Image (tube, rainbow, N blue to C red; front, side, top):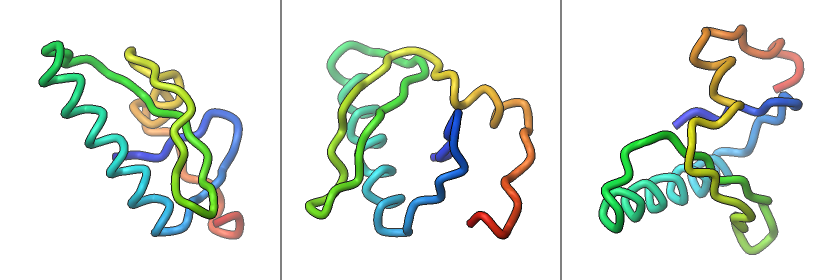
Length: 80
Protein backbone atom coordinates (compact mmCIF):
# COMPACT_ATOMS: atom_id res chain seq x y z
CA UNK A 1 0.00 0.00 0.00
CA UNK A 2 1.35 3.40 -1.01
CA UNK A 3 -0.08 6.71 0.15
CA UNK A 4 0.47 8.86 -2.94
CA UNK A 5 -1.14 12.30 -2.89
CA UNK A 6 -1.45 14.33 -6.07
CA UNK A 7 -1.44 17.85 -4.68
CA UNK A 8 -0.07 17.45 -1.16
CA UNK A 9 2.82 15.96 0.74
CA UNK A 10 0.56 15.02 3.66
CA UNK A 11 2.06 12.20 5.66
CA UNK A 12 -0.56 10.45 7.83
CA UNK A 13 0.08 9.17 11.33
CA UNK A 14 0.79 5.46 11.71
CA UNK A 15 -2.73 4.89 13.10
CA UNK A 16 -4.34 6.72 10.16
CA UNK A 17 -2.06 4.91 7.73
CA UNK A 18 -3.05 1.49 9.14
CA UNK A 19 -6.76 2.36 8.92
CA UNK A 20 -6.22 3.41 5.29
CA UNK A 21 -4.46 0.12 4.57
CA UNK A 22 -7.25 -1.90 6.14
CA UNK A 23 -9.93 -0.08 4.13
CA UNK A 24 -7.91 -0.62 0.93
CA UNK A 25 -7.53 -4.34 1.70
CA UNK A 26 -11.22 -4.78 2.47
CA UNK A 27 -12.28 -2.95 -0.69
CA UNK A 28 -9.85 -5.01 -2.80
CA UNK A 29 -11.16 -8.27 -1.35
CA UNK A 30 -14.74 -7.20 -1.95
CA UNK A 31 -14.07 -6.11 -5.55
CA UNK A 32 -12.33 -9.39 -6.32
CA UNK A 33 -14.86 -11.68 -4.63
CA UNK A 34 -18.02 -9.91 -5.77
CA UNK A 35 -17.10 -9.21 -9.38
CA UNK A 36 -13.71 -10.77 -10.10
CA UNK A 37 -12.34 -7.21 -10.44
CA UNK A 38 -8.55 -7.25 -10.74
CA UNK A 39 -7.78 -3.70 -11.82
CA UNK A 40 -6.47 -0.68 -9.99
CA UNK A 41 -8.60 1.35 -7.62
CA UNK A 42 -8.36 4.08 -5.05
CA UNK A 43 -10.31 4.94 -1.94
CA UNK A 44 -10.55 8.59 -0.96
CA UNK A 45 -11.33 9.36 2.63
CA UNK A 46 -11.08 11.76 5.52
CA UNK A 47 -9.48 10.91 8.86
CA UNK A 48 -11.88 11.81 11.69
CA UNK A 49 -11.73 11.48 15.45
CA UNK A 50 -13.81 8.30 14.99
CA UNK A 51 -11.48 6.80 12.40
CA UNK A 52 -11.19 6.92 8.62
CA UNK A 53 -14.37 7.87 6.77
CA UNK A 54 -14.21 6.70 3.14
CA UNK A 55 -15.79 9.21 0.75
CA UNK A 56 -15.19 7.80 -2.73
CA UNK A 57 -14.20 4.60 -4.51
CA UNK A 58 -12.59 4.95 -7.92
CA UNK A 59 -12.34 1.55 -9.68
CA UNK A 60 -9.56 2.39 -12.15
CA UNK A 61 -5.84 3.10 -12.00
CA UNK A 62 -5.76 6.28 -9.89
CA UNK A 63 -3.84 9.36 -11.02
CA UNK A 64 -2.04 9.66 -7.67
CA UNK A 65 -0.23 6.38 -8.25
CA UNK A 66 1.29 7.48 -11.55
CA UNK A 67 4.08 9.59 -9.95
CA UNK A 68 4.84 6.70 -7.61
CA UNK A 69 4.92 4.18 -10.46
CA UNK A 70 7.42 6.40 -12.26
CA UNK A 71 9.66 6.67 -9.20
CA UNK A 72 8.82 10.24 -8.17
CA UNK A 73 11.15 11.54 -5.48
CA UNK A 74 10.00 11.52 -1.86
CA UNK A 75 9.12 14.84 -0.22
CA UNK A 76 11.89 16.67 1.65
CA UNK A 77 12.39 15.19 5.12
CA UNK A 78 11.55 18.50 6.83
CA UNK A 79 7.93 18.24 5.62
CA UNK A 80 7.28 14.83 7.19
